[in-house]
Length: 294
Image (cartoon, rainbow, N blue to C red; front, side, top):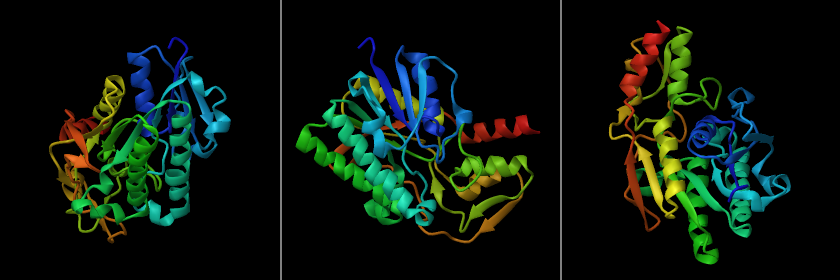
């Protein structure tokens, strides 16, 4: 245990960076980040002797990690993670989420490594029908089905965390992989109208990154092989959130794969989902952002 390390795929990305900060603060483990930098960035690198950053793809995980028995756990967050963009880059989405994740799962199985996997609320809505709304939602839903079978076939041990529209420090604010809150913040800073995809009534349960990584860490620490969700009790429409910034709004045409509500669920694939609710207020977060930008 003394020399064991934690591997985080997507460690230079939004969620991975915040998770690394938490693990450094809460444990003495060394950390390896494996990231292809498709959405992650070297600007997110944390300068600490306990963290090693490796550029590479999850498909090559067996070649990259030379000493797999040094790895205690894998947090697999390094996937293609945008809905609309998965229509534009379907091959990239499937290569990362289907093929790449399969290599990560098998890496963990053959080396007896615990997996912590980020699922998505995007595949839970509309009584499960939303899993077919986009290549992204489809790929994530199929990975959960695969993991269920891997548990039956190989007694694979893992934790599942369902993410809900995460926002906060290190989020992507520009480009096609930007988050909703990130886009709004960027446009506000540049004094540009906030872009809202029609009709604007789509509701989301925005969850702060601190609340999200806290549950990831607790699930890993408890080691109970469960499904967890981390979300917010309060949901807002995209238009309501845009109005919180108290600036001009520009409506955009409807897009493929658009979800109209974030669904809470108490079970998925016959597994109980242990619900957790974040403490961070989106309104207070946005008001604080505006206060420091004016």
